[in-house]
Amino acid sequence: MIEGISIYEILTLTSIVFFIGIYGFLTRKNLITMLLSVELILNASAVNFVVINTYLFPENLQGVYFSVFMVAIAAAETALAVAIIINLYKLIASVEVKDTETMKY
Amino acid sequence: MERVLFYIVALIIIVFAIKAVTSRKMLRAVVYLLFVLTGIAGIYFMVDYTFMAAVQLAVYAGGVIVLIIFSVLLVHHIELRLEVSKFSQRMMAGVVSLLGLGVTLYAIYTYDFVTSSAQGPIEVSEIGRGMLSFEEGGFILPFEVISVLLVAVMIGAIVIAKGKSLEQ
Image 1 (cartoon, each protein chain N blue to C red):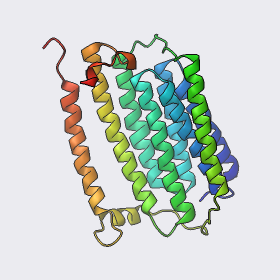
Image 2: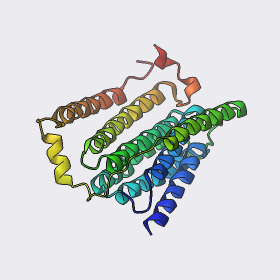
Image 3: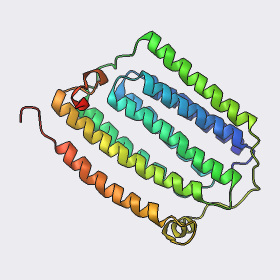
Image 4: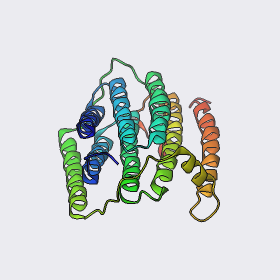
């Protein structure tokens, strides 16, 4: 709990970061920069889990556990995505979305 | 004091998040994302959840960002500027994001959150006990599933990244 800051302000901040991530995901044309937007989205929601836990239900720890799991899954997702991107670059020498046709099959 | 600090961190997060999704240099976008992640670690510190802040700094700032920077260096020419999408597409994305933000903020501000009284910091020992507890409300099963998932991802990443080139 932050002294003098209500839950509304933190939720506003995380919503803004979440939708900045959505904007980036919709406008970017490169696989790596799309991955960056996904990281923004995941981080905003992990903060939401922690904040709702500590402000509304401080006697429970469920949100805390889920934020830890989210970080683990996000790290796993990034590792796999980077592996796929590097493999794709070896195949077609590009990481632009419009060149990515071999993944369709 | 904490109020001012929160607003400064929030401003840093929002400004660098916007820079990260609009910058036309890929490596710079990654570095801007690093600032955002560090700012979010600051938020975790402020809500007295120091374990998660340390995890955030170690896993994201230390691991994920380095991984992404390596992949940028491997697949991208640094001096190349990213192509931007069409103006109409950017406008559409902006309108969709703003609409979604509006709906979310409306839902948040019309809901009456009942905040509990202040409590102490979240202890790491308590988190560890809860994660390994197999009694009611324990999280041993997801904990084990995550460990299996991490092993699977490690093997999968090695297999995929080794790959075959098109000629073979």
